[in-house]
Length: 327
Image (cartoon, one colour):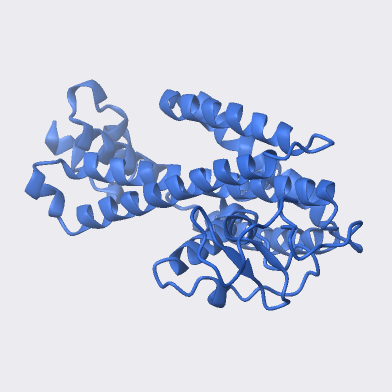
């Protein structure tokens, strides 16, 4: 049987018939993959011009789609963010149910239930005093978990590539599956929580009244009030707090350190919540151990396009190929 598997793709029609006669049940998984690979090459032999046309369609669709998405984001950012968030939330669910990834489905349901409750609390008027802290604590927790999960997954993948998994007698395919799974979990939930956190941050800040996305604030900010949560600031900037410190931005507005960090890292805001002056993130995160969190957040923003819009673009390309009769 192994001799049949070794049939060359260039053997012509006779080789193709011999591949079709192979009994897959008698082959090992590796041999089955090799037969399927040979069948695919035999099926597409002589279609080079068609394949080149399909590649051109893919490139053109990617370029046009990217231009349209950029224009949409610049002209109507609110609708773009809402549609992107919805796709980020729903598209993986479709593949999860289709491919029977039940572990992912359970985690997705738990995350969605808690996030829905937190989002509900963040959008209520009047806003309960404890809600801003609850929102930032939840999303900061998910952010840190996703960050740690992604790092562990990346390390597992690199260890497998360097063969270090053999030291623990772990099969390469098992180690790679473990690393890729953790990497996917970390990146996916990291992107999702940042989008939900940004939406909640906008709602809460607008409700409190010290922040307006497109206009002037509806309230005057006192030096003793945090514009993010609307609560009193009891610790002076020059004092060391027992629970948390007070932070002053370059515009001289002061905030609870936990609130302004949540506003910038979790809520993806890089301006003062009150006057909208640009926040110097390098000055805020002077500790070199904290700066990777900022870079990780920027990576998540870039991956949002791949997760939310790439499946849509690929589906569009397949539809164009189907209409044109390309396989």
